[in-house]
Image 1 (cartoon, rainbow, N blue to C red):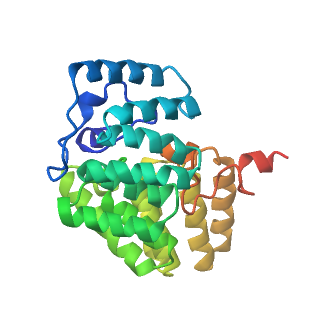
Image 2: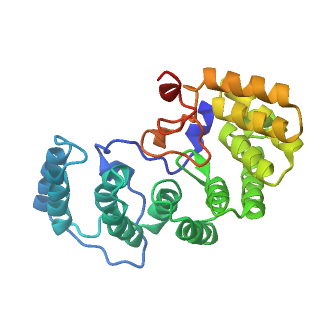
Length: 288
């Protein structure tokens, strides 16, 4: 699956970028540019180095970024840098206006990111849908944070219990990846998380046989994926195979460390994630 990372266009690291000027794309042409002097550039560089010597979540870093933005208020990147740690600290309402400023100054780069943050972090699903649809309309389908826009739209609708719409977008995500990776077998061309969530949606729609097929495709890549085992067991239970369901649940519990392993899982619990620290099924609870 590593080859997919090469073609993803908008991947943001979990820590601060040390060379922002090297990664910034072209700005939205309709916004006036704030010109700065050579002396200003030197000052910004000095302030940015200071910002990267302090704790990512500190108020001191926020104040340093404020000083940079006083010089260069149209820098989408530095607005995003103010927002990102606040979202990771679950201070969504504080981070939201800063993220909006990043979008204002560079929607091509930060509107997909904003829609992603509202899907997985602040759980503003309707706003996430609206932003992703705007992105698709303006810039076409692509990827953000390792997944297609359609994948996150599927999660948005899943969390709103609009299962048919969730299925529609997860199917679009699957077909998009089949097109992007035509030489791969289906279980590898489509990300195992897509297969997992498509299985969840089909399970919610009571299409248990097809849901099991999706969970199996996910497990072909992530063989010890405990959450996929758990929901596969739920499907067998619904189909009346109680013994197989029981065996799968027990196996899932023994593999509880092998839960969703997306980068953001250290900050947020993913939709339908079974095994996490707050879950009664987690290993931490089982050992007590």
